Length: 457
Image (cartoon, rainbow, N blue to C red; front, side):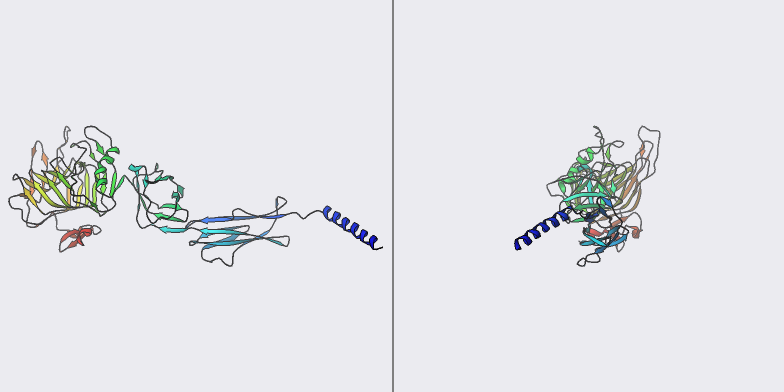
């Protein structure tokens, strides 16, 4: 009897199992998110969508998004609307968001990880050097491998190597970029002001190479090449004693010359030495603002000629020239500024001379300003270069040397007329409006202007 009952129970179990296997299973319900990991940069927002499907078909549901209990509440802000949530960056950090979907009295959940990348504002500008392959040197503050560089939301990153970060700058003009550059690394976003320049000069070698870079950017004219480019000093440049600067690319009154800009950014070139009358500083400065916001200190000029020469329509702003020694074996000018018709200004320019050595009873013109007649043209324009706040300060009495604090030499016809403004006392200033000197570059002490970066030495 017991055997019969056992057999019946086994048969009954098998029947139940067969019936269970034959019963239809409940369709699977799947909660799907448009993204389960969200990475945000400063100022960025992203949207996450949730859908609930059964047998591949979307079904109606109620969706909610909430921060997990362990997450900080001030890393992101979140706006929930129907089946989506918009997550916005607030500060660096990471949080988890729980998505809950409810349908047919059942709930389904998934987590979303949100990472808000760190955002760092760099103090110094980034210089993108177009003479060096549109590359910039990565600032020391940037940590991690660079993954992208953005401008106005678009990627301009092309490559990275030992020379720097190369960018696609086809649509950019030289000068300061209107918007910030975003340098993306694995861990953070770095925001920086950026400038598109020819070259940043950081030492004496780069100062001397500047001529070659400007030549490559110019017209390569064999007789009088035009040199181009916007150059800036990256720091004070100390020229060693054994360096003698020579001008490689000569220009003429009407042709060639440097047509770009040397922007000192308030830094100095110290110890520049030039020999002979042909060793003019950086050819003739051409159109535009040739020199600005720059100091030349402890400079030496021997053999006559001109320390700096500007022709055409070059304007100078905030230039300080300190000559440690001038040897006048020939007539010598510290600054020669000649315009050919269009008058451009020298504004806030000061020359200081410590020692004059007279070899042949020659003269020194501190500022030589005027016009040279138009050659081979039916034009005779004698308008003069304007000098605004130009000052000359000497360190001692120069006995036996003919000094002109400032003279102009307009040309009329074939005769040259000099209008001399004699040197008087220890200081010559073209005008007395010393309060007009640019306060960002100069400081005025008892009526005498000094460069701010030099005054506090």
